[in-house]
Length: 482
Ligand code: G3H
Image (tube, rainbow, N blue to C red):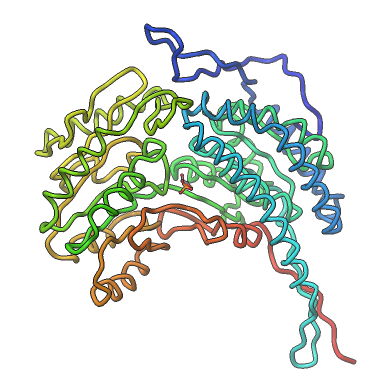
């Protein structure tokens, strides 16, 4: 979709496979193909976005708030009609379970509705005149220009839209490249984009990020880089921008969120929260619990119950009843997880659960690894998949020191009861990460709460409230009382 036109494509294509197999002897399923676009298409999309912005005098950046809202409402109405194909593609393309796929779609619809409400409120707030020292000010929020937006494969609809929707509604024009896995599910929405927004406001590019996003960045004409994914891609793109200091960054990147289990924690609740926290969508969430610190006094009890619970989870296809573990969409992921396990075993860890590390072509059973030490790859790397490193501690300073020296700082889960111990600890933890979850696993939602991180985990803040601010700038008209 470039400049409001659904382009027919005569160039090379890339086949899209699902890691889900329908044959008894494993064979990935061919789902379809997408255009393999390159530099030429990328420049065309950029031109379309620049023309639509038209140095701030385009139809979209100057459009009245109520008219922009009407466009978005039109889009939403049409999007809702595509629920069934999008949900089906979420299951096939990324292996997300049926309930979670439905939740992703519905959460996105809700996100758009809430964003529109927040946008109306923002406009009402801005409409008030302020006065200080005889000067009146009419403060507004204006667009930033052209936004390049790249979404992740684990939430190809929801997180992509958490970037794209606020960027659009604030009056920016956008170029969007879908994730590699979860790319086809954008196609049922192309018509809705085309019918709802003026020419050039939303431009969608298919192809490899390096081939299409790189050339756009090199022009220096992008004002905002919005990306949820890994810092390697974000840094590479940022560096290509000739004036990267002018670039607004809205980034959601890696995290290694720890669970800290205190000796007085309610172990049943902790176990359930840790299970969901480590293994929802096979651990492929930036908010997943990626390391578990358990106090020595409860280590044995926790480890044996947790290992048993991991092995009792159901593996199957996304549409199977009660399924919790599903095929991994990235073909290389089981091998990568295997490498982490082998490295840990070679350095003295053990697999605590009977099924841990069992392999099929598209899956590896989550291994609970203990004792994990700082020299192991599984301690250092963001595994983004089904393997759970467990570290025991005696003094709380041990996990705190680890968190302080980590490159990441998104969230933490703290399990315990004694308020006199927890209260000062919460204050310290809040200075190391951006969200402290008390007796619950880490997560992004509810979407009205700020979603961000310290250090390499994020730049800017997302949420219904914050994203509108991340994709805009305060401007004002000042006049004197005379
Ligand atoms: O991949 C990171 C996502 O933002 C996680 O979102 O906590 O809603 O699963 P979630």
